[in-house]
Length: 339
Image (tube, rainbow, N blue to C red; front, side, top):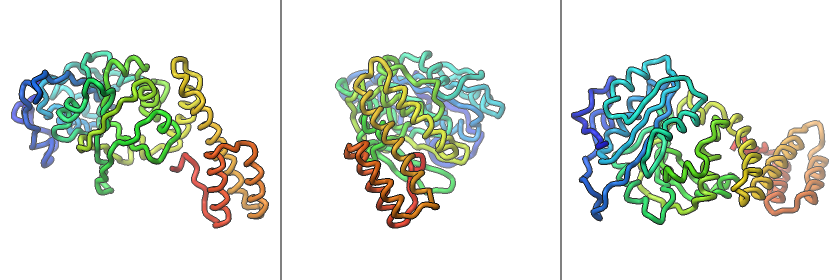
């Protein structure tokens, strides 16, 4: 489908300013600059009771000016005004549905099954694409590339926008939680067939499903191109899962590591996953020692030193060294669930 122009779309219910309310993206020519046809891009928006943001999301996708778009909206049976918003734009949707589902990952898989485009991503119903995003993705997804990592903004009502750029999207670094890794989901675009081959989003996860899938995807398809352009905005608000349930993310992180340490076809992940689980266990042991205010600081220091011979790997020793420094300085310990 060719993306509609601003004049072709109905007037928005919300009277916002700028993109994508009263500004649309430029219509792209029929072919790419090198003469090749634009690849089909499939976008799925999973949504549930997000009428506050949904229209902005839909318009940001439809107003890309892109000549070859498949856009699917999968609503989980919302009880707000979401269905009315979807119906308003259904003429430009490849498919949509509103029915109860098992969560975000299941909704994405349902939409994925209804698409055939070469390039794929899901855009959550509280996130938006920036003008020209799809053109950037299509031109960056060369034949020798498995994924695109673009730049993005983190936005919210009570925080100033912060720009982030994808970097070091390596499977092992992601599962270890390396600080050098930066990922902003709506700015990460994948090959649809590869998403299917790696197993797609796992509906057993509700908070860590995207990262768990990225680990599997990049383990099999590690060729990544990084586009510096800001192509999406990720919204943080009180009702978002990212902001409201950090402990749930941590619990699913552990479950994901356990799953990946045993998953057939991903044997290269087994050892790093098992080592990371050991590190998380060490974090919890250290946290208990540091929280034991009834024991003297020097006794707790000795207890920490006694842990060293059990796991002499450098990362494990760094955990202990950091813990001892914090204990001697009377600083709190930060566990992975608080990072």
